[in-house]
Image (tube, rainbow, N blue to C red):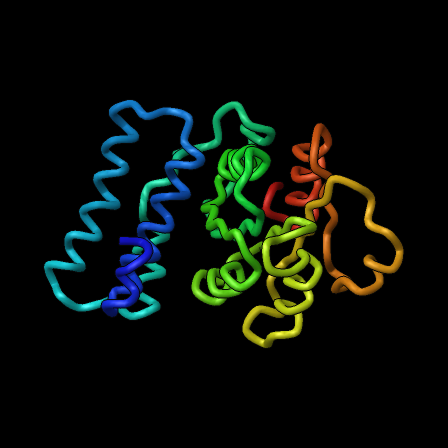
Length: 207
């Protein structure tokens, strides 16, 4: 359905199944609660097909934001003692184990995480969900993370979005100068959780 629903005019179904795929990637528990959550995704797909009409973009975005998240509330994460609002963020990173780890950290913060393998997909998700923050891996399948952040900063619709570049190494001076001035740098590895918490404090998401 993810691959073909859009060809038949049901782009909302494609987005719902993309989000279900994100759920399956990031959940660590396939118990009864997870099965109930997955049923919610299936019910939304069934409802759209029963109506025989694709919801508009605004309605689709609202549906996606209300679908269950693998983590219902902060519990045991880096900022588990903080009161964090559930707000949308986009994580642009190739599919690998690091993406699962970083997405789990973001979920623990109470974020609703929409994941993209490519920069083009990340731009689409950003335009649809208007996230508070876009997190971009240093390298993506179709462009660099810097290219993605520069593109988002250049567009009027996404210019106010906060931007973070995730890299396993220090960014050289040339790359730093070419990035939007507001870009926040986060290091992969043991420092990521600490730097993420500091970023959220600076952005006044954590108080």
